[in-house]
Amino acid sequence: FAQSVVAPRTPQDDDWNDVVGLEPTPLPPPGPKKDETLLFKEDEEIVQSVLSGTTASYELEAKLGDCRRAAGIRREALERTMGRSLEGLPLDGLDYESILGQCCENPVGYVQIPVGVAGPLLLDGKKYMVPLATTEGTLVASINRGLKAIYASGGAISVLHKDAMTRAPIVRFGSAVRAAELMLFVEDPLNFDTLAAVFNRSSRFAKLLKIQCQIAGRNLYIRFACSTGDAMGMNMISKGVQYVLEYLQNDFPDMEVIGISGNFCSDKKAAAVNWIQGRGKSVVCEAIIKEEVVRKVLKTNMDSLAGLNVNKNLIGSAMAGTVGGFNAHASNIVSALFIATGQDPAQNVESSHCITQIESVKNGKAIYIAVSMPCIEVGTIGGGTQLASQSACLNLLGVKGANKESPGANARQLARIVAGAVLAGEVSLLAAIDTDQLMTSHMKYNRSSKDVIHLASTE
Image (tube, rainbow, N blue to C red; front, side, top):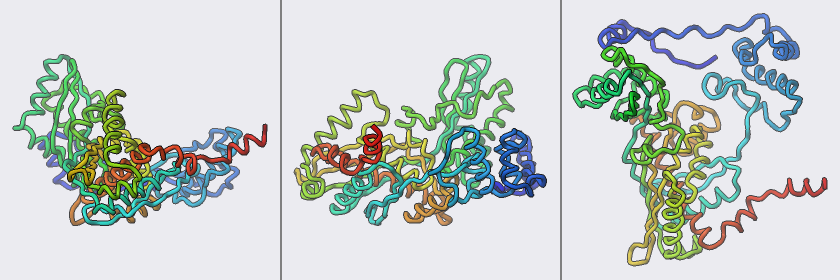
């Protein structure tokens, strides 16, 4: 039931393997077959089989051939095992076939997250309505206010200046001398075309752009950077890296591959290498907001807003020793957009790297505001983007799926939209802090009284 596409092998594939010294890629084994002994049993019998250990819970989808039924049986077995109810966690309403082999294992339901919309975002002359999945009251409203201020001042402009996903395996030798020899070989420009040819064979869309190494004792960390089309690209680049490592072992047979990822990538972690060199899409988004708009929409003044940005986002963040955290709340907007559009929420860590700048321009008649985000890691195909709800949000933004005319254009546009939304969120929150509106708005819109009332009634 896992939807996979395997290109048929041709004689040319094995010929190429001979040229570059790779073993032929084995064909994947056939998928598991339905268990005829379970197909005609009642659900209660299967639940008992799971509880007794006769049937493994993770095998239910394969053996039953019915993903919704498998999730229901697993859920019932779980409730009985733990002695706790999952009432309130929805079961129906999700296409379980769509997540099999792609998004989630052992499903027992799904979590509902409200999706609000803010806009219009006027970005590079086009209007977008931005979907945001969040449970934080005031967030959508605040972003909406920022978008209103930007729109009233003529919109924002974005520049995407780098597009390269990275993966950095770690290899080890018997000595630092041998590790350095591989480093010099890999970084030699004369060898790049050969390595790129090996790497690029792994996918129609993966294109190797750069290789950078760091050595630590006898360990070598090799950071590959490549374009990945409209996919976020982690699986794509990992496959290409594997091809290159296998090729390199012909000339360096004493090379020991410790791991496909050596944390020099660096994925899902705040890292200076990402902040300085970028990872994914690197975007700058800017706008000039008129003094009248600052006063009427943001309810503050330009000098105070610019001063707060320096003291909070720049000096305050420096005092905290942050890496890429020179902003007010970029991660709020990135997380909400990531969840709504099916991105990997964990990559919010580096995707939220951002520095916010605000300064007075036009002889004090306007402010210039910009966000620089070097690590926006997004895609419009693969992973959670193919789920119905997330696909609908991508469709709302006009970036659903792969761009056939210009591969990669949809993912790049989504990164620009993320930066535009962050720009709006930054200016609005800073204005709220500057005018002491933050606590007032949160107390009004982001504080539930239900639990408090329930607690009081039980005392």
